[in-house]
Picture 1 (cartoon, rainbow, N blue to C red):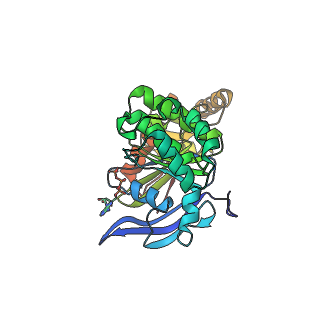
Picture 2: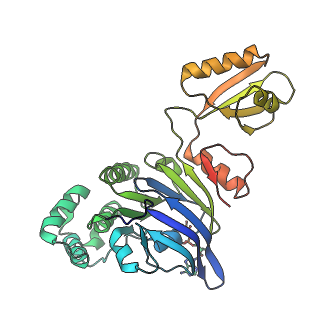
Length: 318
Ligand code: ATP
């Protein structure tokens, strides 16, 4: 199903204008397949606009837009067939039953409905609602049906705009499990949300937009191995130069405290600590730091595109 490009999403200098307002301003973004990527940013950052562009529901004003290896500007229909899109309002025709919705979608995608609909309904757990009208479904069930419609044709890329919004905690847990399952079955996912703590449960990486610009592309922090250590010493002399002189990689100089690159496993961290002490540093604090997505997000938004030194997991753009 994929084209020649190894990238699932390859966007260059993408600009979308509403009147004189740039909703997206020269966004460049490259994503390989296989991920569950979170798309985050403050209200009005341009998340929905970018998602609608990638699903080729709107056309950009300028820039390159490659999706699933295809030029999405020249081939909108081909891209729509390779992308499943779940809008924030789920976009269901309220007067139709779930079965009718699935049947219509199967016809629109040129699929054999009798084979596909029970399978998809079972996969999404909506079998018991097949004969219910969309208007009678709760938000959680509407969301499941919307996802079923989006994945009916087994697209390599599924884009979900705020899928967790308005769901109760159990439904959000179920959504996280479902998204992981779809990913394990080979679909790449792009998910927008304001609920960063929940994105952490399933996202592999995060794209941060602010005011129509790409602020950062961030790999999700790995919790198994902390990537940085916060070091503080008991004296007043600048610490960062002394650490650098010892060959330690300084990730961020916070003055009295310095973040340094972690040395991997616990035994290696113990060796590093011993080396610092043996070099005469009066170490009074040595703490592995595991960042959360929300921390990385706040730091990226606070520092913006002109960020000063940042943790290595953050690739600031611009
Ligand atoms: P939210 O988190 O609030 O959903 P968002 O990050 O999804 O926001 P967009 O909906 O993409 O942001 O909007 C980006 C900018 O474009 C905003 O300034 C918005 O007001 C503007 N905008 C979006 N859609 C339109 C439209 N159809 N016509 C005019 N301006 C629009």
